[in-house]
Structure formats: structure tokens, C-alpha cells
Image (cartoon, rainbow, N blue to C red; front, side, top):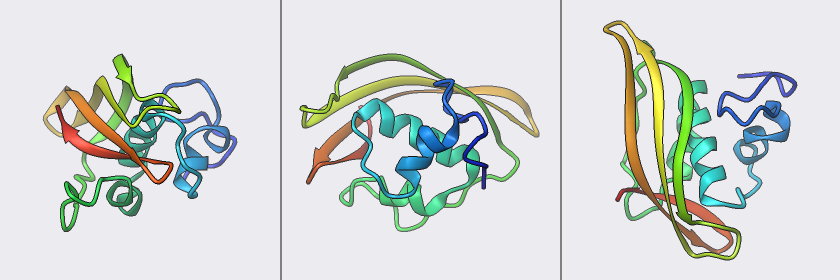
Length: 126
């Protein structure tokens, strides 16, 4: 795990305890972008249970295995559509940079999110 006083891996510049740590401990992320950042952070920290819990039940895989050789290095949010605190749906386009045994790489995705019961969930690629 990461110390609450360490800089959050999601790139906001905040410390983990004031940023994604809150969402990882069960507080509802207020926006689709905040959920996206917390999911990136969960990938970086290996928090499989959080990733599965934040995936919408209709799209969630039965299990998830993370590749321990991948080191997530940086998240860039390229754009958002809706996904605010009063929206029910949102889209976040991002690029996540990583380093693996094969070298450096980037994952680009346009992700869809939905909010149900006051909580945002990841639906999958748009």
C-alpha cells in the first residue's frame, strides 16, 4: 500500500490520503474523472478488489489478474464529457503510460461511466 502522505499516483498533485485514498477506502468518487483516476491508481497499487468493485456489475469480469511486471508511470486525462456530480453518465478519454519488461508503452482509452445510487461505475470502452 501507499502512505497517505505520499503523492497520489493519479497525477493530481495531491497526497494519496486527500485524493484516491478516500475512494479506495469506500467514499464515493464525486465525478467520473475522479473514479477514472482512482482506478488508474488502483492499477498502479495492485488493488484488484477496488477495481472489481468500481466496475459496473453488468460489465464486470468474474476475476482480474494484474501483470506485476507493469509499472504504471503517468496518467493524462485528455478530455471528459459530462460525468459531473449531477450527471448520470460520463466519458473520460485518457492515456496511461507504463513500463514493462518489453519497454515503455501507453494505453489510450475512451471510457464510459454511469452513476447509480450516488456511486460512479466503470462500464468499459466507448
